[in-house]
Amino acid sequence: MEDGKILVTGGAGYIGSHAVRQLCEAGYSVIVLDNLSTGHAKAIDPRAEVVIGDVRDLGLLDALFTRQKIVGVMQFAGKIIVPESVSHPLSYYDDNFTAVISILRAMRAHNCHNIVFSSTAAVYGTSKEPSITEEAPLHPESPYGFSKLAAEHLICDCEGAYGIRHCIFRYFNVAGASEDGSIGEAHPVETHIIPVTVNASLSGKPMQIFGNDYQTRDGTNLRDYIHVLDLADAHVLGMKRLLEGGSSTIINLGSDKGYTNKEIVETVGEVTGLPIHWTFGPRRPGDADSIVASNAKAKELLGWTPKRDLRQMISDDVRWRLKHDNLYGRQGNKLSPDVKKRLIDYVSSRHFSTFYEDIENADKDHLKKIKAVNRLA
Ligand SMILES: NC(=O)c1ccc[n+]([C@@H]2O[C@H](COP(=O)([O-])OP(=O)(O)OC[C@H]3O[C@@H](n4cnc5c(N)ncnc54)[C@H](O)[C@@H]3O)[C@@H](O)[C@H]2O)c1
Image (cartoon, rainbow, N blue to C red):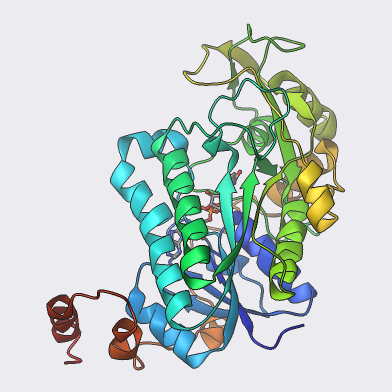
């Protein structure tokens, strides 16, 4: 294994926290950078070092890359709610695109040449193909999808220009939790059908399935689901491939099979043994009949296939919720003494000049202003 650390942005979030754990299991030294906007300090693996801060903060990135030898970045940080991206596009482009510019700038300035990036099936839009390959037409239908596709293009451009190689993963629907129930899905606003259904089952509250007249086996939307641990395994393989000199690639992460919304509700009911009070609601605009990923490329390039099925995704999610009825708790973001011990102090070591001097066409006046504001001039 190459000497040096892996920087995981968004490592306090749902998928990032599982990837951090798998990276630590595989023997990597990990630094988590997270602004805790939707993540939870309690979710960060105790073996990882922690930086609480924003990926868009170039001064912070410079200090971090100067003080640590970072050989690879996994960029999970970002915003994920499609309808929210429609009402707040600036905020979505900022977190999902500007943040990627920042991380690539830091990587370029500090000769870090490997990035694994979280993209999404939303870059395909409502594809008509039954099984979506990586070559399917790209038609994002929301600012969220566009912001991710823009970031993908930027990452690809940085390979030709600066030699930064990438493994871009386009995820389909992610679900499940760690097998010991210690970490799991805890988005501040939950829109994903598996946790929504598990919550409905455990709480007895009503829920809706949107639409019953789609062209699928039972009339409800059919989607591809993947266990978060399978996803995390793929990330470790993707980073290993890059560190070993493998070429850049874009890969779907899905199961190659789909389940309808009705099947999800039925399976949750079977796992919990509790009734679910559901009704049909109206169709939602833009929902495609059926979306399933081809995962042939992931098999071929990474030797990866999903090991966990829908029932395990649901039972792991149920276990996580039963063990943590308040999820990470109201004070999920309060830093425990343990996290504080692992916090890297960066404030005193800003190196704006070395960082920016190397950046092509840097605007000198602008830099002076930044330095003045930060009292570093
Ligand atoms: N969850 C899914 O089903 C799914 C599907 C497709 C793609 N993705 C992608 O996977 C990634 C992770 O998703 P998730 O479900 O774990 O979301 P999440 O909200 O749980 O995690 C995102 C993490 O990033 C952090 N963050 C956000 N903006 C930041 C910034 N500017 N600086 C530092 N930290 C920041 C948040 O605090 C959080 O910990 C996202 O990029 C998302 O687009 C997720």
